[in-house]
Length: 157
Image 1 (tube, one colour):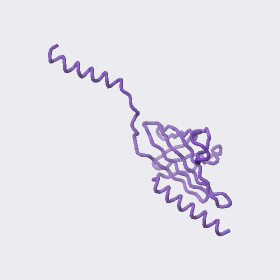
Image 2 (cartoon, one colour):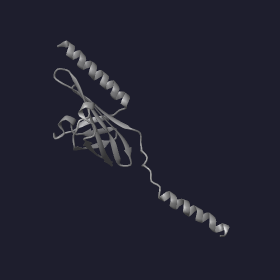
Image 3 (tube, helix red, strand yellow):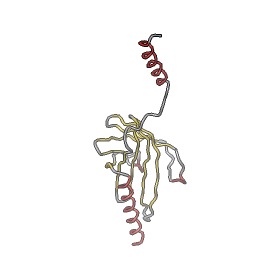
Image 4 (cartoon, helix red, strand yellow):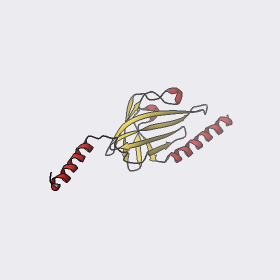
């Protein structure tokens, strides 16, 4: 073979070998979180995004009438197209570990730093709850304040 033909042939061979290789697609952004804080609950939605696919958890802290705090964790897989968010809650995990088994899709919207989703504890009810963009540290602080408030209210009765 002549030298002028060897280099293009080697390049084509390398490209052919690389084309057969597969790997997981890269996560296209950092973990993204959204927080909703109310008197009777704190909800944190967090996901990792790979192109238009989402994978993450929804953590819900509810305060019962006796001021006991109950934590529920939902695992979801979803999609983000433009501003439309679909989160399919799955049965992954078990109730003993705080995972709530459910098979339901929540449809919402992501506009700027605001996520709008149906209420977690009343997913069949019309209307949405607004979540602001937040970090895991902000969720931890909201959780601490929520639990402290519940403990103070429990002691006041």
